[in-house]
Image 1 (cartoon, rainbow, N blue to C red):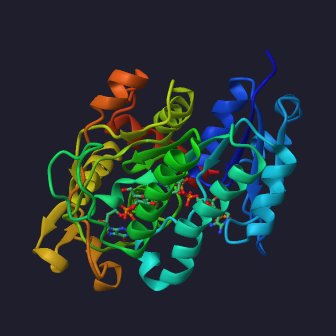
Image 2: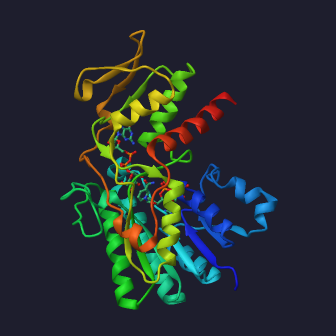
Image 3: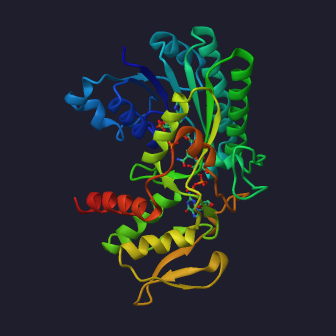
Length: 344
Ligand code: NAP
Ligand code: GDD
């Protein structure tokens, strides 16, 4: 049987890097779409792009942008892949309040540009849409599953909800194999620097090594269901291998607050934290009463998603998927990557 060909929009991101590696290990030809920037943005995939042993697995990059219909259409026409994964997005919730129009263009309209190109080029191409637990927003039930009504709380969440429904609409209208993943937060050593887990791990590692004095955060009390990106790209792939197109919640089912996450990281780093104060005035000190963590209004959002906790029963039953990496192993992986970088 001939090797399958996949096309990944958002290949330079956290999930793009893990998914590329997974697909290459399964014998796929992998094509990725990268944006042109004034600085290089390929650090997460440089190892697979430059390694000659892996290069023979056929990993290709193309310039493109999901806000540019011409590049989207041309790339899909040229590659005519078996599977398209749409991971491309302005993925930062707080930033989506600052650049709402661009976020909508990339995260909502980007999806319809890809779907339209698929309809025109080849309706047999399978399509994966990177949906988000942010669509549950101000949650109406706990835990959240595929039947939970949505209530997005940010321009990002609203844009992702458009993409969710347009994917279903194209599936029903044109009989496409188009599926949505509804993924809860997932992290890794390759997580973007401004997301809270990476910021905490990096900040506390630097404080431990005396390379930074304090860490400034926002809301310490929101709760998230955090998994490992390595587990989640396995689910993404399984969603497109399922016998029929469908929508799946991918999560761990466990939730922790930001403060609990900080305490777990501090424990692994053997940093003793003493918390004082409440709300935006809550602060953490070390055993010498030195200030290590404080909060600033700058990092609060106009509207917050207070709690997310998913139920992955459907994925477990139908995809035979479940998370393998727990929160402490995730943190261990992130810390060891960070310490290695800092000690280099
Ligand atoms: P990420 O690290 O921010 O990666 C996003 C990718 O999209 C990057 O490759 C980025 O390119 C690319 N991109 C941004 N705007 C683009 C545009 N206009 N045209 C083409 N590419 C563009 O995000 P991630 O954590 O890997 O997440 C992957 C996808 O899953 C995203 O759609 C995200 O919204 C969604 N999601 C993530 C999570 C999570 O917890 N990680 C949970 C649910 C859903 P540059 O490298 O050039 O910026
Ligand atoms: N980024 C950030 N920075 N968040 C902070 C900070 C800070 O300094 N301090 C507290 N937080 C809180 C946020 O207010 C939010 O409640 C929580 O930490 C998580 O923030 P992020 O790590 O930025 O992730 P997110 O939950 O908003 O969004 C991520 O997960 C979504 C899935 O639910 C992103 O990856 C989205 O792309 C993804 O769809």
